[in-house]
Image (cartoon, rainbow over all chains, first blue to last red; front, side, top):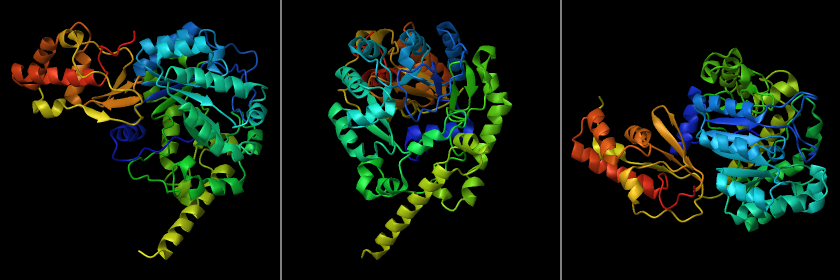
Length: 360
Length: 124
């Protein structure tokens, strides 16, 4: 999913904008395992068969280097991070290194004991993938019968301790009719629901997950006032690039690692800049890596080139990582972004037209 | 040496980007914060371009400190008293010790009130 572009007039967003413009590393995302107890039809992970994932000690040594680099957020994800029996050892090591921890989990393993451990850890937020308002829908998408009931209970266990839980909902053809019911459910649980219309190819370029993306007719509705309570947008607005030069924070405010220790500019753009175990000082790599410097340069070019040549470019939420894996070139517009930007532009034009016809 | 007006530069910049669902901590300074101030173990902080960015997971909040606030934050280690902190600030920013001490006390009270120092809200 594309990052939210920082807005002006808010000290936090000003800082994020500076991190994009000046490459100040704020957030590290680490896929600490590819093991998972769900079999989501749209998952983008591509585990390397037979390759050993990093040990707890190797990860903790890596976290120390990331802390020296200056990241304040540590996103622990997977796979399903809670399938690692040493998950809380790693998380506490991160906490002691001064990170604010975010956990992306499917929630399936969050029983009462795990919830209590989270309460002690006090992560900044826990993001739980949620796929439907009905058990049949969710279980079909996760490929695991009973997952809806287990995950729902996991969320309740966390909320009992007043932990901040976001329900992250990738929008697919299968659940697009249930979004409003999911929002109601999230409100009942005291959670924030985040709806994400972006389905991405697998990391190896396999585009089969895209067959599940929501259809055009639905997306046209999604960006209409009818769904403004879900999208938090009365009308789609064009990008505001006046205070951020780069297309996104890839390799600027973010860094990502896989379970083998490979370092990437972000979770979507899988150009390895090295391996954390081989890097004595991550600050040197951050500054001098040809890979990171290249992706930073491309991310700066995109608003001036790719988006300028696209008819609806000002409405594009463009991801160069997806562009590269899907088209072979990080500067190419890919079909999903073309479709969504066209719809958003059309909706914006319709709004302006209605406004011009409305008497002042 | 940096010359700067004391009260203005110590002012804590509050940034609320996440809904705060819990009641704010008690505004009274605890004896611990008044004596040897100590950072709250849940507070995660890094300095970006001279400004401390502090994440408070227990309140779902971010805070950003200005330059002098960041310097004070650096000096808070559970071993340094507020008088010692004021002495450093007085020397580095060319302000009278008494002025620096008043401002440091006020600033520490603000940090305490915002859950950034160990006090009644501490859980570990």
